[in-house]
Image 1 (cartoon, rainbow, N blue to C red):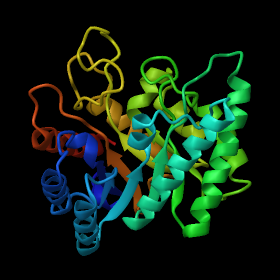
Image 2: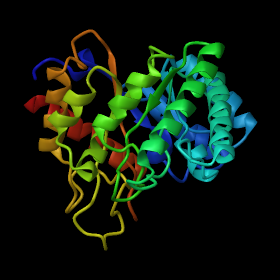
Image 3: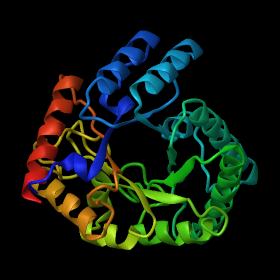
Length: 303
């Protein structure tokens, strides 16, 4: 593709994955600054700030930079062992309350969207019941979000059998759930992550064609599933082209081409596409971010 990739997409990055050691308020803010000062990026995805002072300063940074903010509820759900499809009503409601807290925080940051994932897959005998529980949870979550403003709620399908082993899961199931949730919230959508597709056993074209009518956001990432002994095995988002991993320039090229084919990417639409990458042992955050940008440019040239 000869035209600039920035004519077709707004490129973002998941901050807390790229900078996993940014735990203190100082590091949190300095690493956010390094992203928003780079005009390659139009969007940033964040989690909770270390403290309220850092949160206040981050809000001012986002506003002054004019950058799109996305909020991830994954860390809150993981930390508190939330399960939105729990068959235990009390546990499920507790998880819904966690999401309401995340929604309030997302609004406080001026976020455009909030992404979350489903709970653990309970197995084939209880799967149908769990799906019903998840739909009820999401509908309640969406009603709450809509009562506060126009925050978009996005379900991200994860691996089903490899690492996180989530209920959702397969793209077809994600679409079935989205169809039901849209009866309550027409803005509800899906976030598809390239790194999860090999773990789901789905081709890029298959997954994107299945989800196209509900796709609101796309992640660019990598995974390692060929060697269970590798320290980055599973859903650890290694840099593109990591030895033995699944995603490099050819696979990213196919992903971008498919996003164009389904109409998600189109000149002037400014759709969001974000990196989700994490430094491995001994690797530099800044180095893998630069490598990701080079990989995207190379892939775009081959589209």
